[in-house]
Length: 143
Image (tube, rainbow, N blue to C red):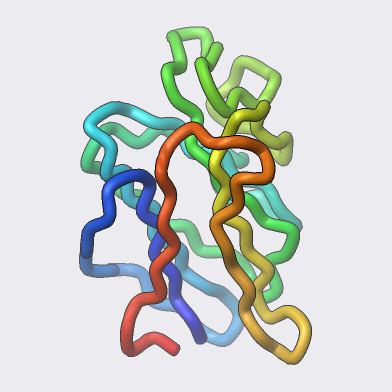
């Protein structure tokens, strides 16, 4: 089973503490920015209510079902105390996007796990614009 690491902004390496099994996949989100971001998450399954806060240098592990599809992860930036964000706002003034997408411009990490041919598909997309650098990196020895 493929395990993925999503680095938001600066490319770097980090060890993973989350293990995947046949029914789920672990995605590690690392905020390599020197500022706070609020990742938004949407897809066929919405972990953590679809959003959370990551200070600069922090990371969070998400466990998603093997079969997660139409999934997107993006960073909301410049959010105030009322969750009005400069980029990536998910319309609702809440930390959890609850399945709502981010308002462009926003850099996207997209996933379809266990898709056609039992393959995992993932990419970085700028179809909705660009707000911060994003990198998706498979973790060696997990696929």
